Image (tube, rainbow, N blue to C red):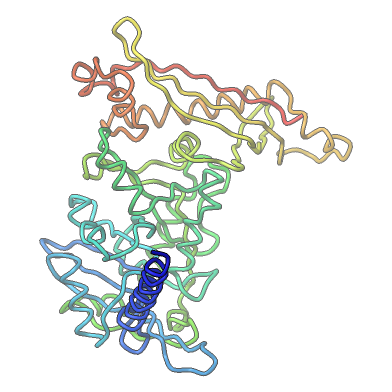
Length: 430
């Protein structure tokens, strides 16, 4: 009996070894053959009539002992689906385009007229792309946005990814989402989703960093139009006949900074909102800030406020926000809560060296002004959601999950019927 067991173990071990060797020599385990594949690092999608136009920013590895020679180029394809466009890109490049390394999907302004998941549907197919790819929309066309030279990186897609970074998300400055996030919220009971809205501005013409009124918006728009017009016909020439393959340099240079073009700054402090897969509008910076405070984990947020005629910049730490829904006496009530520790980070007044040490001890009137500013921003967001019937805060999902017996009665008009209660607590760090 013991000999039989030993013989059985030997057979089992050899079977496992043979199976592993078979997998090793017959499967590439998702590895990319650099000589046969072009790596797509970003995809821009525009809608035109019934067609979609895909502009792929492709990194084509080149043989090099140093490993530094990589050609970046833009190739366009046209078709009824994104898959048709990628097939055309394949025929133009001679390489099979891989989406496993695509980190950014950018939707042009014309895509706002289409159902969102008619455009994005191809990216959810099995083994087609990673669901961690960032998704954003932009002003103008995606192909023009992808062709703009950036100020902080040789490749503008890298600059855009930095504008959508996790660090900015944790500072409530951007509503970064990926393919997975959009699908989960859009196909929930609330049937609403959002994504960052990217804008390009000539250096020095972007909006102020205080989350204030939209001053400078006209100059920013003019700067973007100027940057788009300076492409020298490169992107326009790529529109006909499904687009032509762009020119590029090596070592990460895309050949976009020549010809005296102005380099652009990319910001994504506004947010595009969708309901039922349809575009409903753009949240301004204040509304986007409020949305981020409620939905995201915030490490440090900065908010301006005015108290006693002085403008203060307040840093918020240890933040915690959220919404809850309950029904009292037949009336749905949305309880919006937010708490944080406040610290003065700046003030529009003459510096008092002796007073700086007390910045961690914030006066009660400044704390109240900060709370009022946050409340106003949250109210503006909720008013927009009610006006556009866009449930970005997941109110219907809360109704369905925790107050199901009222769901059929309130689901259609809960956003306009509900009463809003605020519980905003801002206290000094020390």
